[in-house]
Image 1 (spheres, rainbow, N blue to C red):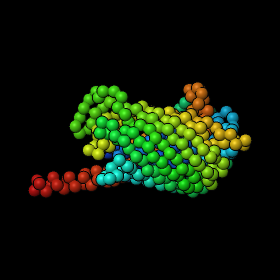
Image 2: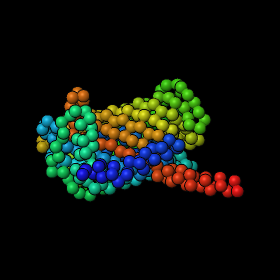
Image 3: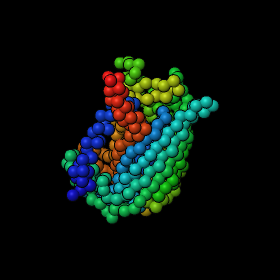
Image 4: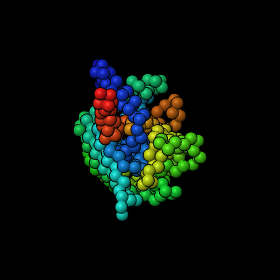
Length: 336
């Protein structure tokens, strides 16, 4: 019996459905992605508002594709990271009102599952692609800690332009980075307005990122420096707080990513990365998946990496549950 089959038989599907329904009643959560997701293809923009989230982030690397072709890098084993994460972003007030900080920590029981199941039994099976074999999968416990500081510049009373830097340390690799760009700049008129839920429109984002990294326990040879460019387009319903923070009520976002690459071959040459990512959020629930499919993605998945993340604003969900528990009691007291 596979891991996913056991989850289904233990009744974990129903709680996930409940969380999705709860998500429709409050603003969604966006948290900064943990390493190594940024180099696997995920969106890596800074958070536009304060939040605390928990979630699961999956990243898989396969040195051989379904046709037996080997990816030209020094990584010769399958990597399946299953990072259980907590992320805290704070937009400060007072003299620091234009600054935000983030701290993200994740621990991973690294192994072949559950990323092997999602790749071969779900995605490749649905698309009719050949299964990707596992090669001596890494079986370890990995951990990463990420931190960042961001300076925001407002346009029309909204925090839109950003610049900052941060770090990633842990068993996968070590990294310091600088980034700058624009986040959720409105590019179309609003088609519907609501004081409570916000305005529906289309927004664009773009980011440039440079980093310096060194080897870790999981990645024994990485390129010392890398450059990354990531544009995105999104449609959603947005409201702006008094602090200028943009909070989507719901959102669908699509992004592309070009990375000079952190993987190197035996000659020390870096392997360029091109990836796409799509994310959807409703209430405190957010799901994103990314893949470095290259060439004709309809016929073949050329890239060695893919990933996905599911995050939840745990504090907001707790408050919703507390409200649901107190309302019946309040109603019965009023009746009596």
